[in-house]
Length: 135
Length: 146
Image (cartoon, rainbow over all chains, first blue to last red):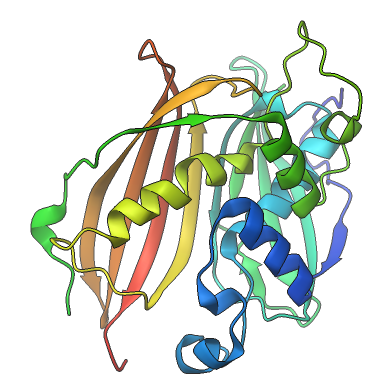
C-alpha cells in the first residue's frame, strides 16, 4: 500500500470524454438527464450550448485515480468535489491530486484533487475538492 | 417556479440498496478503475470483502433519492438543474454485499443571484441502524427562461 507524505503527487491520468463514455456512465449511475446525451435538449439548457459530462463522472474518474494509487478503496474516509466548469463532450480531462496534509496523530492525510480539460477549464476545482484518507 | 422553502428538513421515505458485485464491476469499468479486484472473473473470496470505490456511493444515494425529490410536487423542482458539488463522508467502509437503508432529506434551499441552491442529503445506514455513509449533493436550479 502507498505510504503518504506531504507534497506527494498522484500519477495524472488523461481521459477523453466521448459520448460513449457518457452513455456508459448514465447506464451505471441511472442518471439519464438528457443534458448528457441529447444535443437538442442540451442546446437549450447547457451552459456550453452542447452536451456536457456528468459532474459525477469527473468525480468517479478521480475516485479511481485516488484508489488505484492508494491500493485500497477502504482507506477513503471522505471525498468532496466542487464542479466548477462544465466538461463538454469530446474534451480530454486531466485528473490528478496532491497530498497537502499528513496528520500522523489522527492517522489521516488530506489529498487535494482536480480535473481540468486540456483547454484549462477547472471541471473539478482543486481549491475546494479534497479527499481524506487513512495513512 | 421557485422551490418551496418549507420543504427544508423534509425527509423522504427510506429505501433499501443492496451493493452488488456486478453493479460495482460495471461502475469500475465506467470510471476506468484499474485495480484488478474490480475486474476479477473468478468467484469472489468470501473472507475478503471488496470495498466499493468511494464515488460508487453516487449509485447508492443517486437515482432513487433524486427521483423522490424530482417527483415531490410540494417541492416544485424543475429539470433545469446542474449538479455543482458532491460530498461523501464515510462513517465506515462500504463493501460488496452490504445492505444499506438510505434516507434522503432536503437540508437547505437558498436563493443566490437569480438561481436557487438546494442541498439533498442521503444518510445510508446498516439495517441495524449504524451510520455508514452520508451523501450531500448541491444542486443549482435555474429559473425558467433564465
